[in-house]
Length: 246
Image (cartoon, rainbow, N blue to C red; front, side, top):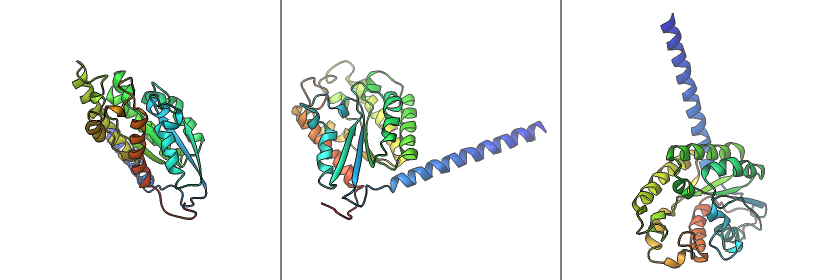
């Protein structure tokens, strides 16, 4: 009887895991099909989540940060766009989960951008913890908002003057790849639109030092313009031509 009970318990657990997997697949399927509003005359709410690159550290003003530049592009497609920038310098994935997720959900946004990971790397947060936090963030956004989520891969930190040629260059470069693998997995599972900043950063930053600010780490105005340009390509994939297009 004990063996039969244990077998029954395993069967129940297996079924529960299967149901959970199907629910997650369903959420990803729905999120993959999400598009921005067809009525281009309606108000579009855009929430930007993440770290100092979202807040705009390194930019000459808040207007030249990448969310603000993305806002300008959105206004070419929608007549009424509202941006709420929740980004905070120094934020890790845990900070987004604790301090930004609920605030974003309360906005009922149509579009969310997420840029997070470099501080997890530099603060030596285990990649397993980072991935768990991402699972919770993406899951919360998928379940509690109707938003299209656009997330960027982490740029290659090793090509910045802060790390290039320094003893930690190789380790930071390897960690960036590892964390991006986790980010890509969680984003795909949640149906988010993924924008590759890693490849362009490796190619362009060494050739165009003006893409970085004076601190040799954060983007400059030119860097944020390029960041917004790449993010816009991801956003465009979720815009459907409809009523009132401008």
